[in-house]
Amino acid sequence: MDSKDHRNELNRFFKSFVHAGRGIWETARTERNFQFHAAAACAVLICGFLVELSIIEWMIIFLLIGGMFSLELLNTAIEHTVDLITDKHHPLAKAAKDAAAGAVCVFAVISCIIGLLIFLPKL
Image (cartoon, rainbow, N blue to C red; front, side, top):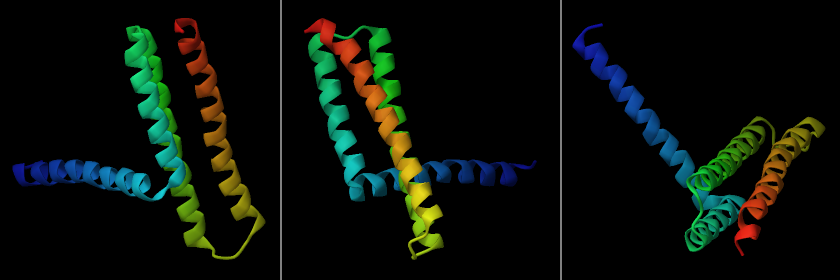
């Protein structure tokens, strides 16, 4: 691989982060549920500072927040893809969207339970 090819590879690599950032920004700007989770994450982070979480607790909180944002992004991607494929109401399209939303819901409930297990003893 010569230096020009290497530069092109690096350029494509860094552009992938730009595209990812654009996807995150667009989702944060337009999706109500993502905005709700962002607000909840901010509240959790503030509470974490107030109760002085341990390093392990912080790691758990960041994993949960990252997981929640990731699932919301995937849910949005699935919804947009289904909408792109068909504009008709189809049982499989509905099933795909419902399953993606269900995954977000399951993770949100589990995250809340874990959050309560972390925060309640500190109150």
